[in-house]
Image 1 (cartoon, helix red, strand yellow):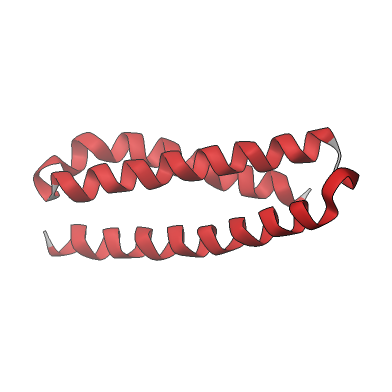
Image 2 (cartoon, helix red, strand yellow):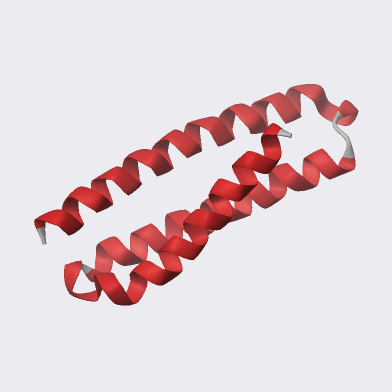
Length: 92
């Protein structure tokens, strides 16, 4: 159980960091306005959606508690991987 709580704390910290990065990306895109190309804007929208999914999955895991950790972890891992890939795509 302690290991689960520690891991969840790390996930929450990472999600907060990603949230801050997402806010910066969104602000930059909004500042650029119409000069941001369609593909870049779609990447920002995709990133926002993936962030919300990861946030939701982490919330489900927290609400379920450690007894459901293994069951819900797979969905969280998938959402986490998608979000991480989306952030990497934004760097390009």
